[in-house]
Length: 437
Image (tube, rainbow, N blue to C red; front, side):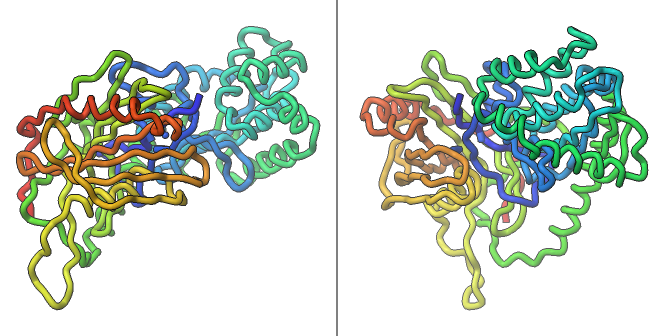
């Protein structure tokens, strides 16, 4: 299933890289609500996350902008690795979804008591070729306890690929080739190069070894996040940013340790079948790293699935020059266009915008334009519009789009989305504003 979802980070973890929208089964644009919806949970914890591979071909899961890398050296033929997968690994997934950590699996074999470990590892590596390593690994570790010594028969490995809907011809070709063995040999060398490696499962948090139980992992990850945030804070203090935020808009203060959803000060009347989620993303803007609260709404429209993404509570940015010491007139349209590229569309997309025009949000006049994002590196094409508005001394921008892109060719789909915007009711923000300027 292709779904649009927001690549986001908790406000407690500062980001050094811009956040983007992504679309895949793992958002053209990243959708938190698919990753961790407040109103409905996705049954597949991996469907909203990028599944790629590192240089050596080892599977990785999560966003490259994560501040902490967690490397898992494990083997499918090792019962201790299976125990880790059942007890500790699920505790890592919310932190991957929050953008705090990125997982790398270093596939080993021949270290445990279950036969067929090499075949299982090769099968999983070939599943990774189609972006489903982690789902396949779930099956392999479940088979450990279910089938014992017969867990990894060739028939079962093949049926596991079929159960995930993998392209059987591609998977079989990979399984029969030597490419998977090259990756496994590199994994063995990688383990041998770790001076502290003793047995599987072996966990590195950045370059710091950790015990594999859930409590120890949490402690080590928290420690590395604190170090990374401290380093980023020091870098920010050293910056001499030329761009400045305008002084006539409220910016909002968040508790970086709370990880609480931040409801926006606007209510939408959602149709049946629509879901939502709230959080905050942190992105590298032109004047430094800043948190921006967002809300994501998704649901059925005529011909496809509709998305409304709200960014709010951000300052307008203007560029100061040596010729003037006053701020230029802030323009929410310019800020919305900037944030479209920074936070909404995938890097590398061919992004086009139309002329500015007036839109309506809750019966109030908003300024915006149509946009399209096509020829993205990984994600499907999409198009829609955005509408920006100021209420109660705070900025709001609604990004509205659909999947598939052809849905927007039907005026009924456009009306479905606009009818939701028409229900918007703004209220005074309850989050404590930070004095601007």
